Length: 349
Ligand SMILES: CC1(C)S[C@@H]2[C@H](NC(=O)CCCC[C@H](NC(=O)C[NH3+])C(=O)[O-])C(=O)N2[C@H]1C(=O)[O-]
Image (cartoon, rainbow, N blue to C red):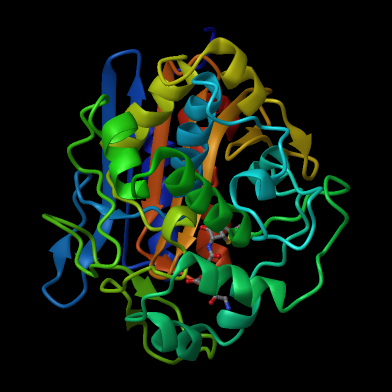
């Protein structure tokens, strides 16, 4: 594939910087055509001072959106769903505009307002108010519909968690099962993702895991251990738990064409430009790196955890990097450097 060898020293330096900027710890794993690189820095648990381990499980946040999109694209392959059909064909009366289609929802082009803007305007109080709450999908959609749409259906890209709450409703309506069952039967099981779980509404992360620490809005206030939460505000938009090994396996299999037909994968990868270096398809981001390599995957931000999980277009090389803090823009930006180290090598410097 002509890629430069991964710059593992550079990758470790990225993690060290993230810790210097406020993350208690960080981890990264590269799977490159059968060769695995692992690196960690700092702590998984500030209380016990346990060191971060590359095998630690964590909350993946919006990386969940790729899993939800895969299930719906598989249903399209099975002729049980049409991407250009109105959402309201499958969920009559749910949305106030019959023109909003499944494809627009999966591409963040529906115009549905993102209810998390209000929910997390004040980061710590907003989190504490919902960390143990259990929402129904309809309650979350109702929070969105209190606001006008951000754009006419299909007219613009406007990222919104509401879209992937609707995706979860579509999965449950069309399959007749919970999203948990759909994820397990269609992705977790077939790919043997032994570190990957959908435990909503339980709050515990099974097995060895990194604690996640929410950075408060006010400088100097203490970090908040956000590890235990239902993530019910996100569910099919952000509640999956996984590991770097499993996310590398998932995006390697997805981009390697093992989870859906080539035609559906091409639709997932049909991108709308978001800014100079990123684009969005259907539950999938593309990031264009300085060395000319484009990688495909998703980012995740959930209280306590930042995730980058990306792979080359053929799935031959994948990388997952995680810092166990959130609400810290410096750390989020620094962690993006893991992509350059993993896919551009030393030339990425
Ligand atoms: C588009 C994103 C960045 S936001 C979206 C989703 N995460 C959320 O919607 C959580 C937002 C609040 C998280 C919280 N921030 C605040 O409370 C700020 N007041 C924090 O940092 O812990 C996810 O994950 N996506 C990211 C993605 O897709 O990369």
